[in-house]
Image 1 (cartoon, rainbow, N blue to C red):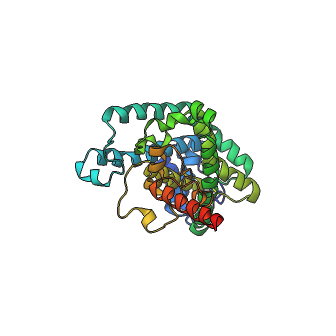
Image 2 (cartoon, rainbow, N blue to C red):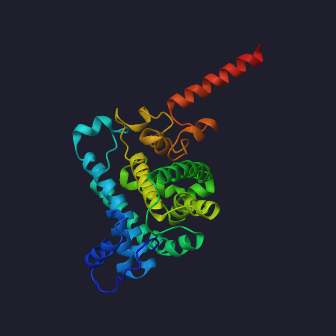
Image 3 (tube, rainbow, N blue to C red):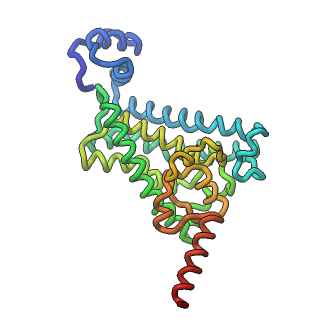
Length: 301
C-alpha cells in the first residue's frame, strides 16, 4: 500500500490489531483509509482482498437495492405509481428471477471479479491510500456514466436485431413489466457484452490516462447498479429524478422499452434515443407522425 509509514505491522494478527497499529503511525490517513489499508495488510494477498471486497459489495448493493422494490410491490398503496399496474410480479416470479441472477453472479461474474485485480493493476489502477479527492472521483464517475450510456445504447440496439434478439437478448425481455431484481436477468453473453460498458470503460480509461483508483471504480459500480435497478423497478413517482433532470432516463423510459420491445435503448440518459429518433411510446409515435405529415405537406407544396 502506498503512503504507509515504515513502522512494522508484523506483530498484530487480527484485523482490529492491524488497524490499531497502523493508526498509530499513519495519522495523516482518515478512518476509512486506515480501514482500507488494514484490510489489504490483513489479507496479505491483494488479489484475494480485492476479489472478496468486490464480490461482497456487488451482492450487498444489488440485493440490498432490490429488496425495497420487492416490499413496495407487496404494498397496495404504491400500485398507483406502478407504470404497468396490472402486472405486479408474483413471489414465484421474483424467486425464479433471483435464482437465475444468483447463478449468473457465481458462474459468470465471480470469475471476472476474481481476475479484476491483476488486470486493474496491470493497466495502472491504484489500490492504495490515500484516496483521490472527491472532485476527481466525481469527474471520473460522470465520464463513465456518459461513456457507458453510449456503449449501452449501441450494443443494446444491436441486440434487438432478429438473430441476436432470439439467441441472446430475449431472456432479458421475459418480463414485459420489469421489476428491480430483473436488472441483471440476462444471458451470460449479454451480461459480459453489456457489462463491458460498466467494467471495461474504466479499464480503458486508466490505460489511456493512467489515473483511476479502485475506490472510484467501486463507487461508479454502486451508482450504476442503483441506476439499473431503479430503471427496472417499474415505478414512476412525482419525485422521480427525470422530473428534475429531463435528460435522465429513469423507470418510465426503460419500462416503455420492456412493454413495447423496441426503442428507448439507452441506459442512463435520453439523448441518444432523441438524436437517433429511437424514442418509444405514444408521445414519440405522435411526434413522428406529425413530422412525417409536415414533411409530406411541404413536398406537395
